[in-house]
Length: 214
Image (cartoon, rainbow, N blue to C red; front, side):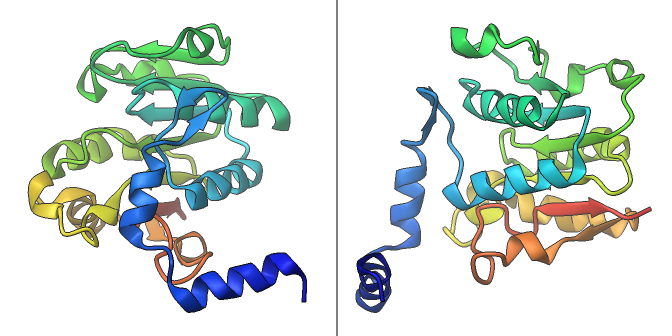
């Protein structure tokens, strides 16, 4: 057995990590020097999904500093093309992100995003990573979910707030919004292969990988 795997087994046996520790660490994550607040497990899952789907448009609700949009843009570049529409209510994106020709910025929130901007794109993937408030999340899903192409994904970030005991702070949070949305949308299924890839619900996007099947 290699020394690396011995260390991994020792960490597991000693339980020297915790969910709260991972959450704390993910706030320190950067991509190419740009803050990109995302669980490391989900970084890996995203690049696998993008390689599988090969979307020509990604709609991202929640730009923040733009690290996530930059990461997605680089993946699109590597797999052969595509564009990102990243949406927020203010402009905090780093200059490195603004210079990327694959990324277009929209600053009027998801409510102000004109779906006419999606005309001409053949395969669309949507990421909801906004305020995580129940009503806002559900509103974004209702507005943008129908744009997702068959075989592509509607990804809802940060259902992990439930496991952290914080769902009340978000009016019920993303998982509540997903459950409500799914009651009226049978075109999607929750894709457990991603949710459980690293162990049961070992993702910050619990219940959040929705695959368009119809």
